[in-house]
Amino acid sequence: MTERNGRLFLGFLRGELSIPVLFEPFLSRRHAETLIWRRGPQLWDTPAHECATLVSLTERTGSDFVWLDLRGRSAEEKRALAEEAVRNRDRFPFLGFGFLGDCPEDVRIAEEAGDAAALWGKASSDKLPVIRMDGSPEDALARGDAGWVARENAEDALRRTGGRIRILGGLGTDRLSSPAPLYARVERIDAEWRGRWAVGSGGIVDDGEYLGLIAMLGAYARIREQAERELFLTKS
Image (cartoon, rainbow, N blue to C red):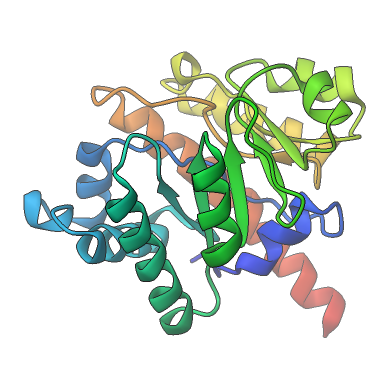
């Protein structure tokens, strides 16, 4: 079982730590409910229930962070999600809480209630590590962002930036369905770029590709648990 630790993901973003991490913030509700073995609108009908569901989801994915999407919500909904993030940070101090957003209001909320921000467009922060969700890795590097999300071809983005910025995702949602090649690819990228790449599809895994999602999470768990064992042996 992966030991979740938000400080590891933050250390990755800051270029301070080199343990494998996961960035898969766009799981559909169907996939999320399947992973936590519970279904129904009651899991999502209030900010408190949504945040609790996403916290539970980290137990199944091994993610160090809970990601809350502020886009397309009312100001009241955004404030309520921020309050739930603060409440759950106290309850689960080992987890990190991040916000996805695309406007100054979202940035303010992330800075007040979160540990990191994943942003689109001109939205930016000088208080939190920023994961750039659009544009190019070169653009993200030039503006001082901590990371950039690749939709596909993670290897190409890593080579283009030479490890000067963290690359997240990039396995491609259409390349998850063959477990053996996927495991080999994840292990190969991790071996070459550990500490500079976060495992992730880079997009939204289709509801019909549940086995591909499970294969990706399994590949991540393998390299993360191996790194945790190596770290334990180094300290002992």
